[in-house]
Figure 1: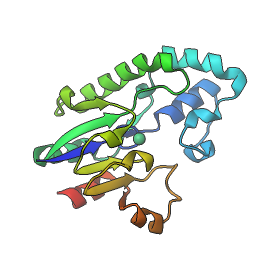
Figure 2: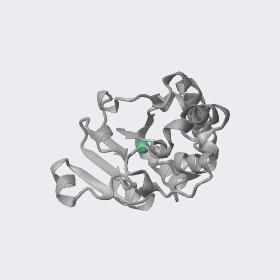
Figure 3: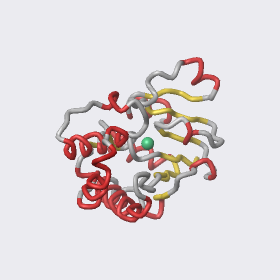
Length: 185
Ligand SMILES: [Mg+2]
């Protein structure tokens, strides 16, 4: 079986930090307002310690929604590919809270993707050290490792990357799980 490495945030589920930051600030920011990969950059400096406490007391995965068709397509892919979910869990804003982040991630995956064995979860930042035949991620940096096929899942922070640049990096853009199904099955 070919080894398929799949990212979690903005690939399996979406909008967790956006909704959580809005709940914390009482705002109605949209993803494109962040201007970077990190939605948390919208938090003013003077609210930072309050934000850390909010993060500790809440679960970002209570704010997400699953990507459309993800469970159905992943279930099918799971019969043909050796699937691993690779996700970074280090909480940038306070590394000490990363254990909580890991727990919340684990529980979300366990509940929503019962057909994937938890032994197939990889909690990691530098995904390029994992060997893979196929990679799916919304981050260009995290698609840097070798692979036959690399699928870039469209997200707010990568919409402006040109077709030319994608070609240079051997990346194929996908907008949803039905497109992934068409390419991989
Ligand atoms: Mg991601």
